Length: 217
Image 1 (tube, one colour):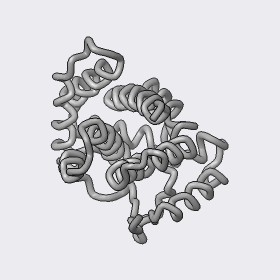
Image 2 (cartoon, rainbow, N blue to C red):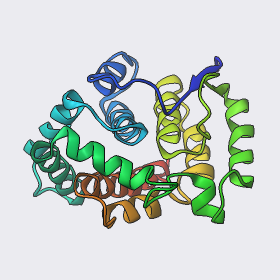
Image 3 (cartoon, rainbow, N blue to C red):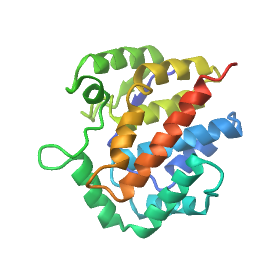
């Protein structure tokens, strides 16, 4: 696999998750959906979304909410995106993830797994990323175990290989152990309105992808 950079502070692209997934011409519809979901979560969690990204998320309000819990969560995310302003969401993001010294939530794997930042889970992640050919973009200092960075890695893994074993191994080692807890906390966060819907969608999708990756071949 070719060495690639990951960063969670890159400039947002209004159509990033659509354009990126549409370019993966070798993916079937199921894989495109998985990659698009991870890409959307990364875009919403790396920095406050702009008006264009909120407008795209608002399109989920048209999803049939009667099918299953994932459909309900997507519909609620769309409704939240259509009723919240860019400034409201920006304020939420800062209260949740930045704050004065620290936000309400700490979106890093090491924190969720050990209670501290920059611990052994991050070291193990860096070793695995190096083996996969990924490296952190040189201009960014954000640790690689940020939730958005891990979502970005999953997008690249889905797009670059038909072998789902590498996706499963990465998911089980670095995502399955804490994503659902993080998204559950986000869905109940006191500072959140829009991001409660992001949390519910993230929790439902993570649970679904865990089941998908553990299906018999």
